[in-house]
Length: 108
Image (cartoon, rainbow, N blue to C red; front, side):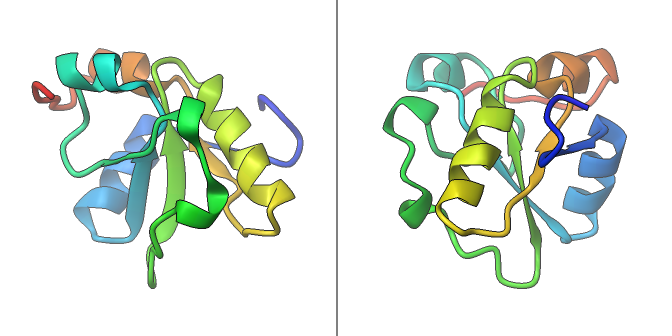
């Protein structure tokens, strides 16, 4: 686990949750990275301009953060928690692990 207050979810758990309509994935990579490759269905919210108050309302879905390798997504989760938001999950391994699992990506 990357940080005791952040839950690591596997790419398989995140993919299954997205497919079932139970996870809202928030990608915190920067615009230049997102323009190259992204996970279909992910909401973009770059960490450099990250504002927890601007996070989308996930409704009945679980909000999960992602990035390239799993470091910035932990930071985003911690920032959200500092703002008293209940978003304590990230996708361990990020986009790199997503691709390694053979899951689909798309051009920005």
